[in-house]
Image (cartoon, rainbow, N blue to C red; front, top):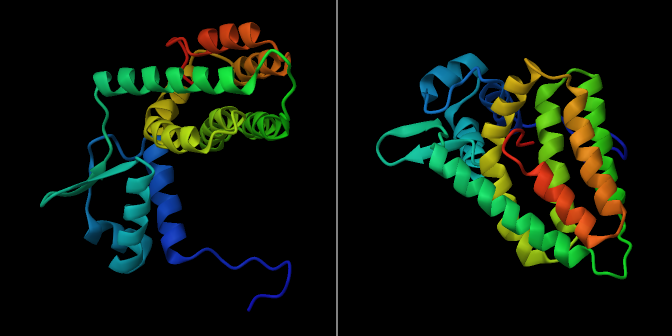
Length: 215
C-alpha cells in the first residue's frame, strides 16, 4: 500500500491510452487510420493485454472505433454526424441553462470557473491538448449546473464524440487567431451565466454555439 500523499505510477493501460490519445488529438494519427496491435505493442514496448484495454477505453471516449473482423481505427465523423452532434449539444446545453437559471437566481459557479482557469493555463503553457480537454470540461461543468443527473449522462457521450473534431478545429484556429480568443469566448459565456439572467445566458449560449468556432 502506498504511503499517504504518494501517487502510484500510471499503469501500462493508462500510459498506452495517454499516448494513443495524444497522437489522435494532435493529428499524428488521422481519422479513419487503422491501429495495428503488433505495431503499437512494438512502439510502446508493452504487451497486447494492456493495449487492448487502452483501446477499449478510447472506444468509450469516442476516439476509436472497433469494427467487426476489421480491427480498430481512429474514429471518423461525417459532416452529417458533426452537424447532428452539435445540434444535439446545443439543445442539451440550452435545456441545462434553462434549468440552472430560474428567474430567482444565483448558482455556485466554482466548478465552471475552475475549468475556465484551466483553459487559460493551458493556453499560457501552449498546450493545445490540455486546452481541448479544458473546453470539454467547461461544457460538462456548464451542463452540470442544472443538477440533472440523467441530462448529464446523456450529454457526456455527445461531447466526448466531438472532442476529435474540436481538437482539429483548435489547430485550424491557432493558425488564424490568438490562442487567448478561445478563452475570451468562454469567459463571455461564463459572465453571461454568472449574471443570473436566463435571457442573457441563453443569448450568449446561442452566440457561443455558432459554427464559426466550435470550442
